[in-house]
Image 1: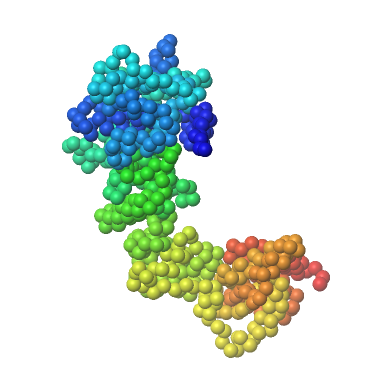
Image 2: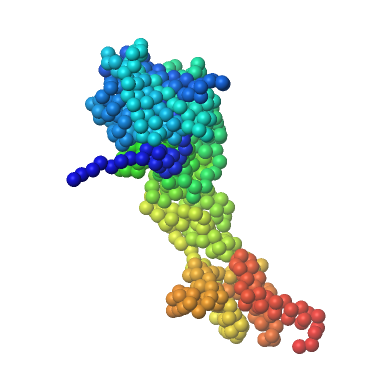
Length: 593
């Protein structure tokens, strides 16, 4: 024996209002959708048929009802039973034999959403020469159908909403006028609220008859300021024929946070789907806000987002290609504009260039990088010095930049986001030699001492190494410029990681300490302290003949080099600094040893 499920309509309405739809205001969108579909269906049979949607809210002191009239195809009595009284039934497109593509509605629950704001829905409808049908539905699941004696003058439908207690404001004239304009301002069918026209006229993606490029640009700038609240840096026309997408991208005039998901304004067959649709563009295109219309992309059940399927992925790539093309054209036709754009949105372009050779060539040509010889584009750096030489972290650049410049070694700072990835693959897009310079490499490029000087400083090197062993530092003596620098502290990435792990190990409990031991055991990578034999103070420290004074000098020069490299002072380094300072002060004041 089989049975049929029973549906508690109040429970379904609660489900719609609290879980499917974000807000009750969507009831206006669903009424518009039904009316547009009805007019579309009628025009398929009679292209000259009138098309109008009119909202008639109750005025002050009125009955509080909202009436919505359309000049669409209407329904017969059998269609009323079939479509209005069956929850979950597909909309007109199937039952009337029309293709899905022609209609906005896809879920058959549009009218049901009106129960979020109404306790009773009345529908009076007439289809062609068929008699007028009156359907009344209640939020408790009851409905009735009648054939009234009074006939409608022509085909069409009137929907009347009787407000729920506490929801009367949703049916007020002011609210309905605002929502009808919000959802339906771009519709090609006239929409009125009372005597007021709410359709906006020319859509952003359209060009008016006789409208010049300058006039359209001015109109789009005004639209962006009104809708998005900013005057755009530029506007870019977008199209993705496979998804029936056409629209405009507005380039932000100020930097955007790449970590924030970008939301766009999307219309479905010229009716607003949502003003916060995500995933329409590639993640790197966070520097634009879009308004687009689509005829093919699928909305989700709530009709407030797009279904993330293969078609949307294809459209996303096509729209990304459009923005990429705009950037390339800007590089050839408006270099100054491109420089201004990059000054604002270089992060987005860099993110794209990580995977795109054309954009990498654009970055190579136009974006100035920080170097130890001043800001230069990669193209300028290549032309002047041949080899594109860089260091991969900001700390390493700060340590090495002045010394490398004094040795006539030009160096690029690739420590900012995306820079290392870009430079590591530069040779694949541009014919150039690329080289990474590490602190260890720089040490090898510094001048070694002649044999006699090396033998003279050997005792000092051994003593300094014993003093600084507890700091995890390897001591070296070299001769380098500038001679004003007594010592150079160099820390590469591996040594920095080992140092962080060791400091964490010292402060960890037994459990975490055992886990951190995995990272701290094995070959030790140490930072380097390079004493400069060309510096008078360093040479003096190497030849004091007083072990205590040498200890104070070594510890003082070590902490000074640490601070110049902008490295944190560890407890051990702080203790060395205090001991050096107090010891040297004591010696200077002649205190007894």
